Length: 553
Image: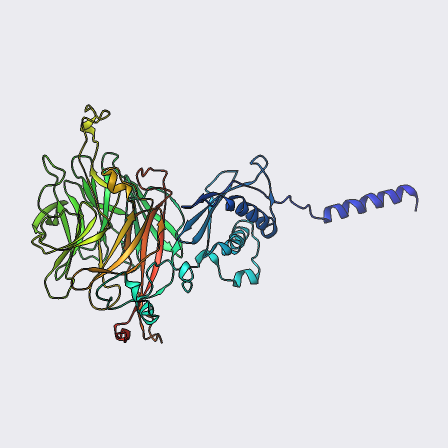
């Protein structure tokens, strides 16, 4: 073989080999922005640590290159860590520099020591869902931090401040009831902890939970001052299914839900107002979209429960010289307009101040209300006071009144004119949460001594949720959550889920979720459109009535 022929064969062989070898694509590049830490105390020492851990795990698990700046990066990752009652929540968004909507990922840890596992789980979620990497069986089989609730056995980790009353009694902790004269008749068993939704770029003012489309599943209605969003809950994630913007003039201050037209779908009653007068409306799902059953109604409105009668729509008019006119009325919807249908049997309270309940089962209703000074009142329907709490409850930053369009020419700067305002207290939930056959009260306690000193300037940087029971002479504490860092905007109990058929747990009467809407890093003093909100879920297990035997000393 001559040299020319050999050279031709050699070149051909090189070309064949070069085409046979695949060209390895460069790995994707990711820039990780500094994390935001949302916590009541200084935890800045975790800021760089979490960022470094996530960078290391993504490089190993997703096969990406971590770059220091956005220049040359394929993806940008932004994240935050939020601390609630000893639980740690990690929220990150991964966005392609080519544009498009960022993908959100979420993980939680019950303790600071669990953050490493949470970061690892987060990195594998990103690796699998964005970069097509297969999560190892060991990682897949491990408990997923993203849906883990806070472990209950250790008292320090429990999200409930008050010990299980029965366990406290048996352990000889006689002071566990805070000096209550009578012990609660039943208990919530299983302080399972809480889980957290993703963060919402949304200044939450009000929320409610109910079945808007008649499918037997609950939806979440969240409202800011001028916006309504409806979500479905899938695990710890909330999937938005609808939203609307409302008039910039009329601010939303309350949301309630009820199926008053008996069609199997709960209506959404939206109470809104400007600084002088109400302007409310009603929404309902018509099978294709949410439509207004009534609009521009000159009523403050709220769906309430009256024992022996059920759910009714109640309303109160604005006054000529005052924000609220005397008298609370039942309302009926006729041809798109709300009309009076009789009085609600209460006196001395405003529409948003009260719930009607037969506390002692004697067939006569009592009124549980929040005073303008944030004290709980138990009243007769006539308005006669039966009991007043020592502590403060129900505080919010939501109010009626304030500066309106008509006040533009008034001297506001030097204090010569101060527009009136009436604060809307937190909702008072009535439910038998300890399954003893008697209704209990669920209410918030937003914590702030300054708000009661400063009067009209209110701010609540943290809060708790309490369950209270009537002991014959007053309301006593059943349980409370541990302190929640952030402003509690609203809360609601979901429906009771009965035990599965054939369940061997004869002591359980089912479970119910307590949902708490929180504005993070805010006392609620300025709820802006760029505020960050979230929804916490506290699962409660109800004990069967037959298992509740009196404790023996």
